[in-house]
Image (cartoon, helix red, strand yellow):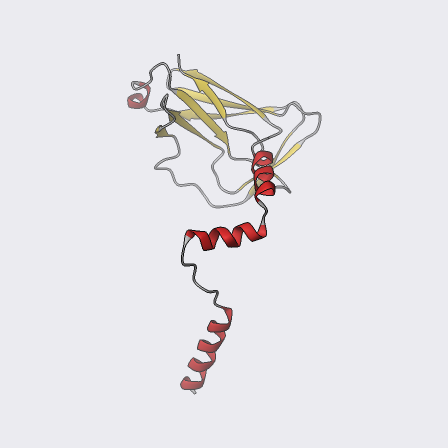
Length: 165
């Protein structure tokens, strides 16, 4: 009996298995055959355009991302975790020096919320003193909002950048 079960299991696994990819070109060929490069670029450009707007403000060791809905309609948002946003300190050469979410663990639960027409909300980040001590002109804060547009999954807001003077 065990013999027949193992034969049946082995044959069913072989029928479902996909051939292994031998190189990056193989992966590109599979992805490329499903989505024409022109459509990929269009899709990426669309995803970076959010309906929400954002701004950053800093007071002492606190940086606040204010997210606003400038439209005349409510925006329905979906989050894939307990994280509302992220803050990154970038050098003048675009290298990441510090990221707020590093070292944090977030719940992995889908949640939904609505941002009413004309409404705003704040996401507050506390920046450690040792990071604040590294700030120099030419660096920049870069903040993202984790909410995605319900239905489309597109980013609800583009990245917000603020130069450090």
